[in-house]
Length: 458
Image (cartoon, rainbow, N blue to C red):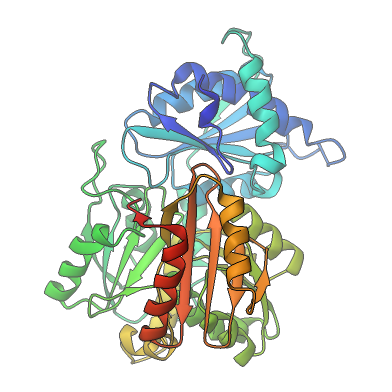
């Protein structure tokens, strides 16, 4: 087993070169051992508390990896509830709905078809990352010399589709407008989950890439603009009200307006601010520090408490819990909800979008137009070997601004700001710049580019 498959937030690698059934067994065994050890001090009386959930996505090797994972868990003495082929947010629901001590979803999310991996969650679907147990799981798994052992635990299969559908649709606010929506499922899990959940709502859904054949029409990453071209052309051709593109495991989405313009996920966060603060006046709302100034401005405008957080779902979820925030949004397309176990969900985000669009006669482009008041670079990558030294140099160069080190280096001036943060896994720095005018954006980006070097395609 290649130890490099263990990342900051999950486990991921190329199948079968880096990650195969043998690795899955060891990871299952190690996950069960670690997750059950967290039960100390918790009520063990719940029927499923010492059990684990296992689910998998639609990749051609996901089921085989899930079966090997389950065998490893059983050999560790754990009982397993196999919930089959699901989207990742259903795993968060299942852990809480069934009361298990955690679960593992077999998925490589937005990566190409040759990849696979494991997303591990603990009690109450709290994320298990590098600092919350993944190092320990890696240590246990890599120390295992074989995949043998008596399977002491039992396994049961269950289908949670109806319970999951009920959970998602409880967020519907009222009468649904007869919207025409183009949905690109990216040949991912939205292709399985969207029809049973949304087919009876009165929304006309135009389906793109709902098939599961082990290949992707385009990479299942909606943040890459080229992956949205089919969605955009279909929106215009069919005169749709809005378009949605989900990623591979359907925990993220990107929205496109009726004119075929991509809506940045920070703009989407800002759009949802008044909607959520009407539900929970004075609540905190969490946003990642790459987000436009407009997000903080909208939260303050509607009487909320802005909570700026570093990038990454484990940080966002933790702050959502500690602040009891009603909602959180990340530039990556993850949207988090207090009433969804403080977890993210593409399907619930879609429901909230239906609610917002059903309450107005304005087209989507007009709703977001006043929120597009700044100019942004988008996230740009630069190849840098000594990342810390480079960030120190940026801090020195722009010392007249207001700087902080929450995640990388952020420097703010009265009419522009930038954030430069290191990649967890690669020799890259990721840059975001925002300014009050296009001219200023171009000027400041060029100045920073002169320090960092030429951007790399990524």
